[in-house]
Image: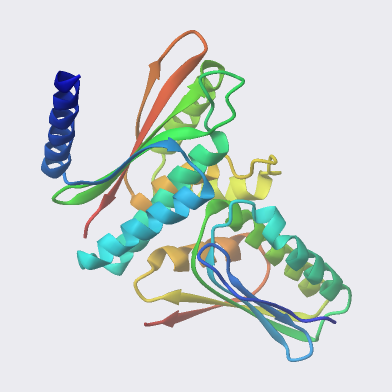
Length: 126
Length: 187
């Protein structure tokens, strides 16, 4: 599969999707005006990946901030990985949050209430 | 003419004094775009970190500003149907124990009641209730092409832990002016 490697900006996140090296990461900030446009290729990639996933997928979310429009897309991404879990493959979400950022931890917990995927919460400092 | 100029100078001075007294760090009236949103949030971020405000408060202010501004850039109506611009006013003020983010924009009268209902519903909920509502909305929302209406307000209430303060001023039989104040407590 092709590798997606997008550098983050002020309002869009870093994205790494690399099946060969097993790297899956969304980090930085996500507050684009048009979330659908930004995430379209990413969702397409994940659809293709879900058709033939690795036995174990570890997805790192290390977001500093995301707007509510992005929060719906993040749920879409998680729901696609939930399908992979339903196929009997292992998926683990590594949800990183800054020690000062209770809100980011809570956001992760809310997602884990909605989707049936195990979450690992990882606290980081500066 | 001279008198008029003098009037503007007085006005500028009065405005300056009012801003100083109320510790208003930002006032804007005009079109609200993604560029404006990015500029204001980064200005506010810089001034907060200069004031050595805690990370938690900085993030919350940033967060609330983004949602307020994107609400205007996505949902504001105009005075007339021909006018496509999404305009609003934005104000950020610092009090002794909180930051206030005040935004205002035009809304069609026909949309006022449903917005009022949402605001009242949000204000009636506690933290756990807001979280439940957020999860429910995010699951159910088959987003309109505008994306995410309603979620922004729930998010603001959830992250500030304060009630949303709002007012509608009817301008004519077509439109009203909607003012929203979000309060972020320092500490």
